[in-house]
Image (cartoon, rainbow, N blue to C red; front, side, top):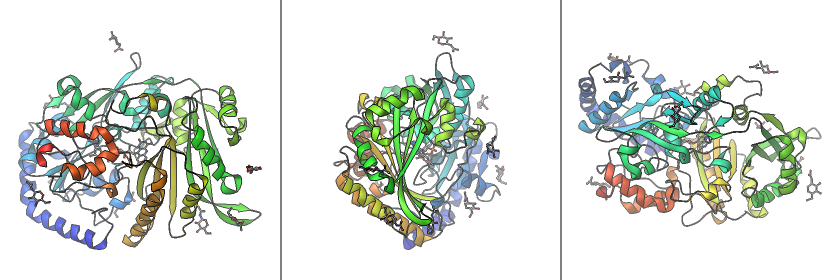
Length: 535
Ligand SMILES: Cc1cc2nc3c(=O)[nH]c(=O)nc-3n(C[C@H](O)[C@H](O)[C@H](O)COP(=O)(O)OP(=O)(O)OC[C@H]3O[C@@H](n4cnc5c(N)ncnc54)[C@H](O)[C@@H]3O)c2cc1C
Ligand SMILES: *[C@@H]1O[C@H](CO)[C@@H](O)[C@H](O)[C@H]1NC(C)=O
Ligand SMILES: *[C@@H]1O[C@H](CO)[C@@H](O)[C@H](O)[C@H]1NC(C)=O
Ligand SMILES: *[C@@H]1O[C@H](CO)[C@@H](O)[C@H](O)[C@H]1NC(C)=O
Ligand SMILES: *[C@@H]1O[C@H](CO)[C@@H](O)[C@H](O)[C@H]1NC(C)=O
Ligand SMILES: *[C@@H]1O[C@H](CO)[C@@H](O)[C@H](O)[C@H]1NC(C)=O
Ligand SMILES: *[C@@H]1O[C@H](CO)[C@@H](O)[C@H](O)[C@H]1NC(C)=O
Ligand SMILES: *[C@@H]1O[C@H](CO)[C@@H](O)[C@H](O)[C@H]1NC(C)=O
Ligand SMILES: *[C@@H]1O[C@H](CO)[C@@H](O)[C@H](O)[C@H]1NC(C)=O
Ligand SMILES: *[C@@H]1O[C@H](CO)[C@@H](O)[C@H](O)[C@H]1NC(C)=O
C-alpha cells in the first residue's frame, strides 16, 4: 500500500471501506460528540464540524497543501475539532479513546502524504488553527509560539520586535510549526545555526492521559523525542519555547542561473566539492528545473541550475569569499542584493522586493498543486556522468514539473552530534537532495504517471546517495519507504524499515520513549514510532 489515490482498485476499495465505516461508526461518533460536550463546562459545539455542517468542506480544504489529497475519493474525517482552549484538546483525546476513534493532529497541513488529515480509520482531526499566540521576548531572545501558527507568522512577530533577531527554520512561510518542529525543520540559516528543533528549549504537550506537561514534568527523554521524532506520535504539542538567533543588519542574496549551454553540469559538479566547506555565513543551494530557452529565436528545452544563496553579511565581504572558494560561479556584484534578514525571507519565497511583510501572515501558499516528493543524502560527489543521467530523466515529455533541490550541509550541522535530538543527519553529509514532481492534470492516470517517474528517478540515484540505510528526512514524508500496519500492532522489523532511514540509531530510543508514554499506541499514523507492547 503506497499512495491512497494511486491505484484505481485500491482507492475504490478505500472508498468502500470508508463508506462502510461511516455507517458502522455513526453511533461511535455520536457518542464521541456527546462525550466532548459532557467533558466541557462551556460547550464546544461551535468548534465542531461534521459533514452536515455547511462549512465542513471549507475547513477541511483550507489547510490541504497537496492537492493529491483534495479529491472526492480521499478518506475524510468524521469530525473536525478546532480547539480554542487546551481543555478542548484534553476532551478530544479522552473521548476519542473512550469511543474508538483515531485522531490526526493538524497544524499547517503541509504533510507531504496528507497524514494530518487523511486516515483509513474512523478518525477525528484536531485542527490547531485557532491556537495562534506568539510571544516574543526580544530582551532574552526567546519566544513562546503556539503550535497552530505558521513559521511566516513567527518570522513576522520576531521582525516586529527586532531586525537583528531571526530563527533558523523553513524557507516556505506557510509551513506550520506543529509539524515542522516535530520533524527537525531547516532553512537558509541551517549552516550557521542548525535546525529549528535544535533551538527548542521548552514545550507544552497534552499526553495520552490528557495531562498538560512541560519540559520539567515530561522529563528529558520525552522532551528529546518531540524535537524531531515526527508528529502525531507522543501527544499534542500545544506550544514551543524557542531560542532566537542573531542576524546581521545587512544580509546579501543572489540567485545565479545557468543552463546546460552555460556549463550548468560542470558548475553543479564543482559545487559538490565546496558547498559544505564554505564559510558558515554562506549558504548556496541549487534548484534544478526544466526550462524553455529561446536562443537565436529558436525555442529549446534545457535544464537550469539556480544557485540560490543567503550570505550573512554585506556584498564587500561576500565577493572575496566567493572568489576564493567558488570562482567558477562567476558571481559579480550586479548579481547581489543587500537587504535585511526578514526581507530575505520574502525574497527566497519568490515575493517581489517591494512586497509588504504582511504577506508572511497569509496562511495560503501562492500556488497549490499535486505533488510527490522524496529525499536523499549525498556523501560523495556525484560524477558528471551521473548528473547527466538526471538531466535525461528531466527531459521526459510525459511529466509536468520536475524539480531537484540540493541543500548544503556542513558548518553548524556537522558540529551537532547525531543523537543530540532525533534528527540524525549531521557530519559526513555534503548535501541533501529533495526530489519533487508537480502536476496539475487531475485523475489517476496523471497521478500514476508522475509518481512512477519520481520512483524511477529515485532508483536511478541509488548508487550515488547514502546507503544502509538510504537516509531520508522525516519532514519530507514518503510512504514508499515503508508503512506501519494499519491495525496499530506494527512490528519493530516493519517500522525499522522506514524508521532507520529517518532516524538512524535514534530509532531505538524513540521506540523506548514511545513505549513509556503511549504503550497502547493511541497517537499513530502510517509512519509513527510504534511502542514495544504492540509487537
Ligand atoms: C510547500 C512546502 C514547503 C516546505 N518547506 C520546507 C522547508 O523549507 N524546510 C523544511 O524543513 N521543511 C519544509 N517543508 C516540510 C515541512 O517541514 C513538513 O511538511 C512539516 O511536517 C509540516 O508541518 P505542518 O504543521 O505544516 O504540517 P501538518 O500536516 O499539519 O503536520 C505534519 C505532521 O505533524 C503532525 N502534527 C502537526 N501538528 C502537531 C502538533 N501540534 N503536535 C503533534 N503532532 C503534530 C501531524 O499529525 C502530521 O503527522 C515544506 C513543506 C511544504 C508543503
Ligand atoms: C455544526 O452543526 C451542529 C448541529 O447542527 C451544531 O451544533 C454545531 O454548532 C455546528 N458547528 C458549527 C461550527 O457551526
Ligand atoms: C479542493 O477541492 C475542492 C472541491 O473539488 C475545490 O473546490 C477546491 O478549489 C480545491 N482546492 C484547491 C486549493 O484547489
Ligand atoms: C480554558 O478553559 C479553562 C477551564 O475551563 C478556563 O479557566 C480558561 O479561562 C480557558 N482559557 C481560554 C483562553 O479560553
Ligand atoms: C530576562 O531574563 C532575566 C533573567 O532570567 C529576567 O530577570 C528578566 O525579567 C527577563 N526579561 C524579560 C523581558 O522577560
Ligand atoms: C564553459 O566552460 C568552458 C571551459 O570549461 C569555457 O571555455 C566556456 O567559456 C564556459 N562557457 C560559459 C558560457 O561559461
Ligand atoms: C516549454 O515548451 C513546451 C513546448 O513548446 C510547452 O509545452 C511548455 O509549456 C513550455 N514550458 C514552459 C515552462 O514554458
Ligand atoms: C537544444 O539544446 C541541446 C542541449 O544543449 C542541444 O544539443 C541542441 O542542439 C539544442 N537545440 C537547438 C534547436 O538549439
Ligand atoms: C511593487 O512593484 C510593482 C512593479 O513596480 C507594482 O506593480 C506593485 O504594485 C508594487 N507592490 C507594492 C506592494 O508596492
Ligand atoms: C495485528 O494485526 C493483524 C493484521 O496484520 C490482525 O490480524 C491482528 O488481530 C492484530 N492483533 C492485535 C493484537 O491487534
